[in-house]
Length: 378
Ligand code: ACO
Image (tube, rainbow, N blue to C red; front, side):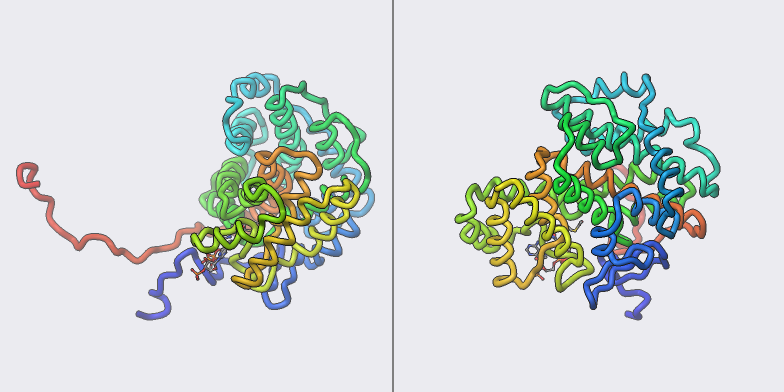
């Protein structure tokens, strides 16, 4: 079999295109957005600045950031028709299903939805609309499920603060907000991962922006991808107490179970984002006076390294951060969405600007060619 005919299951190692958005450097375990290391961005910028960077290619000046932020704040509104439709979303649906449906419906209420696919400004306009309304939807959905009324967005707050306030009706401590903002920066972009690739495939057919984002949300939901942050917390809850971590993990490995929040397709010596998220996780745990999740975290990781030499990925520290902030487990992956919209959108734009239909081939392994038998001979 020639190299060209070799099946690459899961597209392992396939270079599908070039990208200028971010770089995952396996050898050095580094991740850069538009050339800037994510650790540096986390320590020195906000999620809004990073979203701007991903979309425009450069960090904003003060004036550019002000314009970008004002545009986002001005778009924090949802059409009354859509509000009405949202009331019928079942309470027992998964929040990711609800969010995927919200984005799909939002498209029909956006009069700009079908502006030219090649118009960069229209893509950015739509991205800003989702950056503004997706957090509103998640916060609304969370509060109705816990029996609380909607909290209106506040124009004076940035994305993270406003989201927190819409969820909990209070302004958090600065350290809590920083840990949350850092999680959004780290989740914002990660090259050709499954959901981003999905968004690019949809864009490559010349379909519209919202279709690409809706499809990406579906891909992110799976526990092998973004859904892993929920699965990590479900695992800690199932273990029950930190001292049971060793026995629980050994047993799960014996049963050949995948331990959620560990392993990565690209990183084999550890996910570059973990150290940064872990730093903010430990600070937050100290601030909250809660060492329980840190103990689960360290105990399971110790077993995974010793037994399998497998390192955690970003979902592992982000899950306890979200729990410590106060989010219910089933809202962890929707929060991932509100951040990854920035990265997906940068890739949609890049794909549209230099498009070629994405259409791989497969090696046929079905029945040999045969004739259709008559009905009475089947
Ligand atoms: N727990 C136990 N064993 C694991 C794990 C894990 N989390 N991850 C990999 N392995 C083992 C596999 O069993 C396999 O072992 P084998 O060769 O003895 O069969 C080997 O490591 C290679 O694993 P694959 O699943 O083939 O690696 P792949 O690159 O296809 O998958 C993936 C990567 C999907 C992330 C995998 O590591 C996994 O399922 N992890 C758990 C889910 C998770 O945390 N996903 C989040 C990814 S990061 C993100 O989306 C933000």
